[in-house]
Length: 244
Image (cartoon, rainbow, N blue to C red):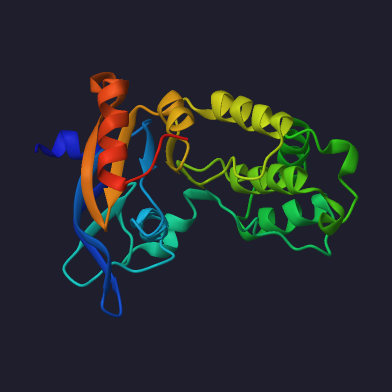
């Protein structure tokens, strides 16, 4: 692979392994993801999906000998620099329940040392339709509202890569529409990596798809090369799950 192509990659993974005791959560997984791509990761519980996301986002170190670069940065040696360039949306909203929506965003804006934080906070609160609740405590929010505020938090620094761990889980239809709209608005110029059990939604959004099973890469390819019926059959046969 030429240096020119390498520079265009958002993620470079070589023989990524991670064990927890005797269990191999990831076993020699390798793939490259170009900048601006949207990767959907599928697989059953315990397949290694969330572990992969945690390694890529610097939250869990890979095994010795694994090579993992995100935005051209080593996830272990350059983790501090990398954290300034990523956003994470997960089951855990990573918010302070006794702070208001505005206070939560201001706190994280200060951590990122953002210029003109008030302007960015206003912009995002309006985008997630929470401007009218800006002074309300986060603990008073519904699940959907909490996730919308979490989305605003993740987008604050305008990250190069956005990691999404089952972001639609527990959302009402309105909140799902807002998330779809936000992804559509910021998709250009950003890379997305999403873990999902929803085959239809994941394929609808993605430019690339990855199936993991028992910590191993079973399938990886561009969306344009995927036949949906064949992919669904492989998914069912490999992970032993029906299509949701």
